Length: 390
Image 1: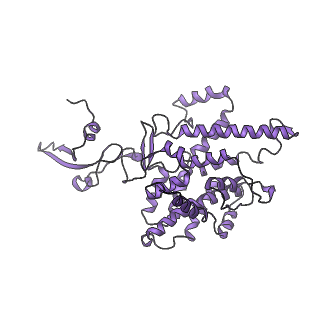
Image 2: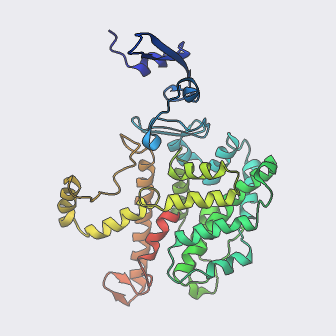
């Protein structure tokens, strides 16, 4: 008997079908059906089971879709055991090192990177000029209660975009209409996210600027000082670069919960912005995008090194529902390919912030504890809520 696995045998190619057989206990006869095999560009082959109910009257059960492909996709490939993440064939570390976030957006939408600098500039221009939002949306956001979680504001406001755009039926949308809807999502989400944050802390909204990158604009719209009357203060370039790469690393991650939610809502031909809002709702959960915020919250709960053994012991105790957050995405069985670049950028930001604090301490004679006066916001917990929204 061969010691090779099914996947090893099938992966060699040349096998177009697999047989499913059952023996009738009454007659002793064998009944068989053949199911086709689909060979992807990357990853293991798949058995096409769409005819199974018709041929057998049986269905399959796969809780969580851990062994089922829901569609064919050319966007992203993940090999968890090997720690591989690719977009359109490009490794994520290569994109993080050589591309900008908008270049990666262009790649995901068009299948290729911009071939010329002019192509990229035109795409950046189209995104930048659509970063503004309708004035009535500003009023809409102001209607949310004080202290609302930015994600709740984001869900409602993105859903409200359906009242302003894509008013025709989805099946009537041309390719140009669909491309424009994609650009509007890319352009307006940072603005709405920043407005959601500013509203949550009671700060006035800040408009985007045409001379800034998408990442630079987001930082500006979120953290522009209130007392400077709208005067622009550029954030450190290390922060802008880090955010841009952070967005690249989260641009797409295959058929995760939020992507699947958007696709499921989209299958009914609902308005594209309503579908995006449904995905944001899924992303909010602590088992998905909200896990990032949960990591920061847990670090604050741990407090210092002396409490680490206590939390590790709780994580090992099977009778304790406690979960240790922030130790890698469940799909990867080795180092998350995004973690290496994120660590490098995080250390760069820390070094930059430490240098800024040192400079402030030298100039400011009024020091309270270890922080310059005014260095901390009135509600220092609020920025944690932005981690999920980013």
